[in-house]
Image 1 (cartoon, rainbow, N blue to C red):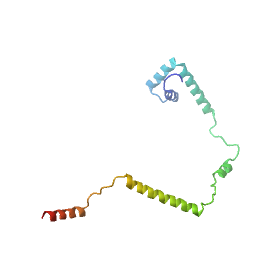
Image 2: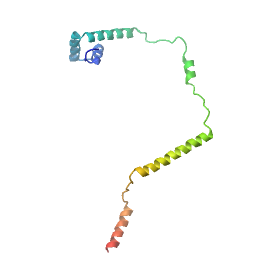
Image 3: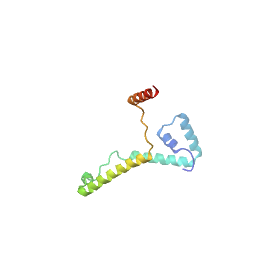
Image 4: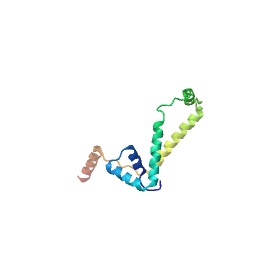
Length: 130
């Protein structure tokens, strides 16, 4: 389409989804724009062809056996024991490296004082003062 008119408005116009003002706006544009008139004609023709299609189409043969054969799970041999141990070792190393990196890169977390800590601090203060 060579103009900047929104194509969605033509679809809404064709489907009857516009109010009176929107409908008049599209009709006024169609009077002056050959490209949009051509597009609207193509949309009308496409709709007519779609309505002429049958509601259901029966496949020429039963396709399910071929589809089912493709969907069947493939049997694969289990991984050898050494491979499972190798994967476990790699996972442990990754976890350890992640823990070390987080301790190294992240600042330490300051925990809030609990009631026991506050009481101990008060006793220390009382002993120091008195």
